[in-house]
Image 1 (cartoon, rainbow, N blue to C red):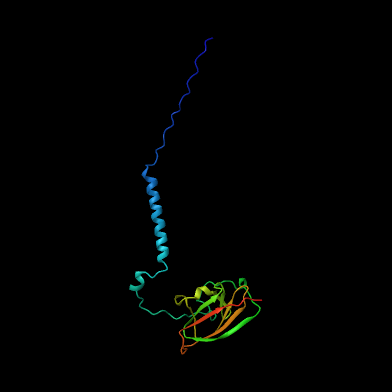
Image 2 (image 1 turned 120 degrees about the vertical axis):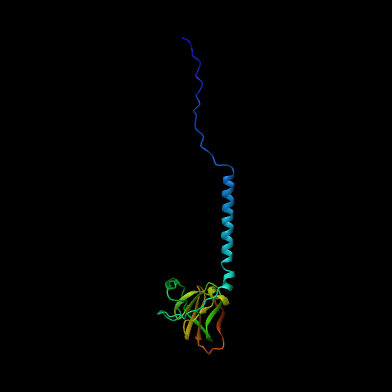
Length: 180
């Protein structure tokens, strides 16, 4: 019996899959970086006035709000925060009465205090703290403004909206006191 030499292992011929050219991953990376830069750029520009804001003018004046909602509602169909999730306080401090023709600005500490107009929650105080973010009264009349924050005493104002008021916009500046 003669020993036969071991057979050399056969190499299997695996067909090579065609690979991507070396420039394709680089091009994909460049496109992704450009898309990210555009997203950041447009996100920053969104809050600033655009060139179109100065050029394009509407032909009609804005319509007066005509909704069947209660006084103090931001606008018909607007989303409201659920009042049952809002903080409550035991006592409210009635601070004063103010008159204005058009709207309301708040400067409240803490700035996460909730603002109620005639019992309807309209949002956080920080939403209405600049001249660009005025809460406009829907109609002339008296509005009860309540400021509520967890761990603080409530503050309450009465703002009268009328066409012959001295101020255009009522401003409420208050630092809420901690509840005992």
